[in-house]
Amino acid sequence: MSFLINCPNCGDRGFIEFGFGGEAQSRPAPDASDESWTSYVYRKGNHQGMQTEWWYHRFGCRLWFLVNRNTKTNEVVETAWPKLKDGKPAPAWKGK
Image (cartoon, rainbow, N blue to C red; front, side, top):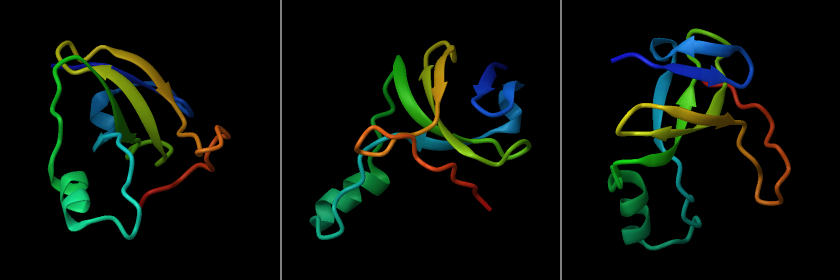
């Protein structure tokens, strides 16, 4: 199965150029309980339907961004740069 992802920096590309980074979720506070951290790291919702996910453009600009994707059909509805808690755009973050 193939689908396109619209990189906010590079435009439409085949999904094979990207790396999946998992479901987007809020990170627990540094002093959160072990149970909170265990849930954050290991328990995934694996929902069928719309989901916000992290993707990394490994064969392009090498930037992380968010994708709203229907996991049942692989339809990519929206892509966007992440935002800080105050709503301002986060600085572009490069991976390895």
